Length: 101
Length: 499
Image (cartoon, rainbow over all chains, first blue to last red):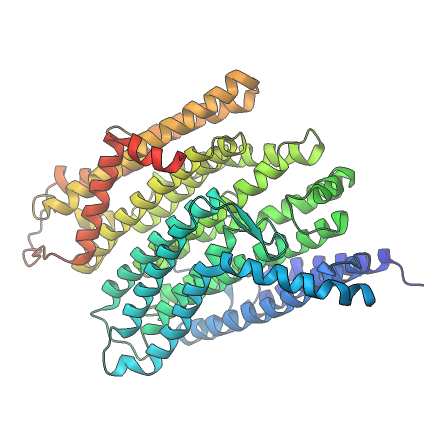
């Protein structure tokens, strides 16, 4: 029997993997993938909790909007990374440091 | 199923009744669509058509907004709130959008790109719709959609032209940092939804859920949620993107980013604070301590790091971080019922910031540089710009007789009142740090007149600078005059805001 706890555990794991991918920052695309991991963890949480909210279904609705917004943000992010690649010929954030104190 | 059918006609009635509340955003949306059409079709015949449509729709939105004065209403199942707070916030946002649109037009007027310039205006209007929604809601779903709308539009505005390496880098840092922050916020929101089962953060059910939830989980969830708001407001420790993005982005975009999204985010945070701080339970205490502690740290960090900047745009970035700390102090006054103080400070901050970026842009177009040292000895050659710029600096510090002084005075006196009444130590610390950082800020804002008037330029290779009268300069001077006038006669503006 899969209970709510299982869902929460999986989503916490997804969140941690995503956070690691962002903090390790080897590659801009990997950071975007990490962000997607976190968003999917949140979506899983929302849908799992939404089961108990049978009147409004706010969780499900929120999950749908989150998917759409995540797709939009990633599309813009990829376009910007492509632009950076044209200028720098690399997408490793550690090599792109013209702006700093 | 039968119950659902029974409710449908009620729901439709409710939605139709709510539509008039959405008029302002409809004007902006219509402007957004027609601006895209103008960019595609009419810009070939008259190159200012998309700019003209943008200005027209912002003015229309502002005029429609004026009819909503004195209204207090809820719509779309409490997703949109039309009240005094959202009225003033949207009025300031409209003014900000109008000035940003003119700045963008002026900045890119003499440059040629392969990409269409008109798209920038439609993106600005889309950001405007997001900002309006941001300031009208107490519903997390709406707030999240608004944050994402504003963020995505801002990423595009920073990186759209990518004239040089710096702009591409700034856009990448902004997009990655911003998406990461909003993803973490979404995770926090999902946890909060789990505790409460309700997404409206001012509703009693939501607050009861937060009271009942375990302390550790509530702390994690609330801190995650503040990550997203903190990114938009750029308070410490989520301020890291601000200096890089402000330096790299085109100057009018920087002017937009440093002012308008902050108005909306500060309104959301103040709604959140006034809904959450009032209870005696753990989550209220955590929210209050977080806001006041972050306010202190932000004021200190912003103003201290600004001292050693040599680039004016970077310096303004840290200065705006310092002002964010001050605005968070005004939020504490707001949640204690003194709303007009926050509105006054936000209005003054908007005027000062746009004025300073107007001068920065005029100087950047003439000198081709934003380094402070490039202003050396120019005070006598461009007296109007540098006199006004120095007055704006004085106002940003908070010295009389400018509006910045009155704004800071109101915030300090209201916090002092709360301290005398409640007697918590943290208010005293807020006052001390606020006063101290105002003194610190004096040292870096005075670098502008120091370089311009008191230092002589050895090289005389800047003879060809002739101060022509550009619309940017006119706007900057008008804003400066407004700042001084509000500083001398604050009662007029304060009367309008308190009314």
